[in-house]
Length: 157
Image 1 (spheres, helix red, strand yellow):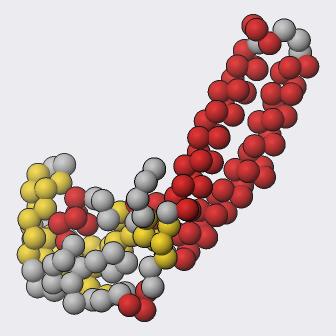
Image 2 (tube, rainbow, N blue to C red; image 1 turned 60 degrees about the vertical axis):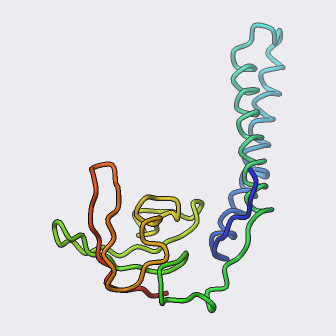
């Protein structure tokens, strides 16, 4: 993974907690599984050993991925966020012009996205279409179900 990832202090804290859990809980558990499988004898035909080694490989890859995200993280200073146009960390209220549904989303980094919490990734079609737009703008956004016109009703932090 390369490139800077912008996130909130809370998002970085969650990443660090995940890394801590992976290293201090998951890694020792897999090491224990490997040790138990070795104790059972011939590892050349030991399915438990193979499964534990595969799990270890996936865990180590995930640890490396999280470490890279942390290393490339840049904290966004929320006090300097502008609300004159849509940008990352803005809370954007939009209205679907087809069905008049009003939605409110916070635009966040890919790692902090949580649709249930109303946080959409900056990489989504809706967020990409809204970036740089102002209150009152109507934007046609290509989504899986077709093109939908959205009106920007409010931008806040």
